[in-house]
Image 1: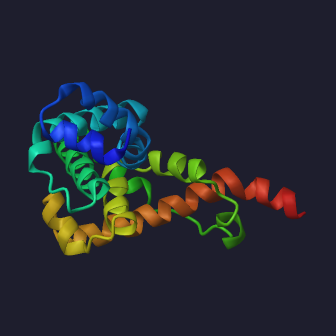
Image 2 (image 1 turned 45 degrees about the horizontal axis):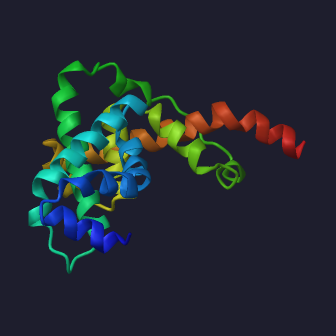
Length: 184
């Protein structure tokens, strides 16, 4: 079965194809969801909420445009909505966690796997992770991030700086000793 056929059948309202669409794009969608969720459970919730929106709005999808881009936008927006719903539960102490960080050796970075990086991102405070993902991975400008998250653009810059410092510190703590042993 082709991707186009699955999408076309979903657009025509054939619910038997919804599961096929879900299975076909599961890995792609989960990869995006994991970058935004605080843990795997959150990512799965974001993923499932996203697919519910996809199924509800599939008639609005324009076939001439790439489906993955449309799906990606829905997942990101769903993750942002998820973040906003859970904002009241976040601890403000997270904001200060990233302030006393050290810089890791550049050689370590080249040895990190995608799973290592995802694990490191999961350890960031939620706001840091959201801003990092939106600016560094999705390519949004700070002004766009500010509008999406309803924060000042200067705060977006601060959160990004703190996220990068926190990542450097995490890399140093988790990988620097192994790196020193491998070159020593």
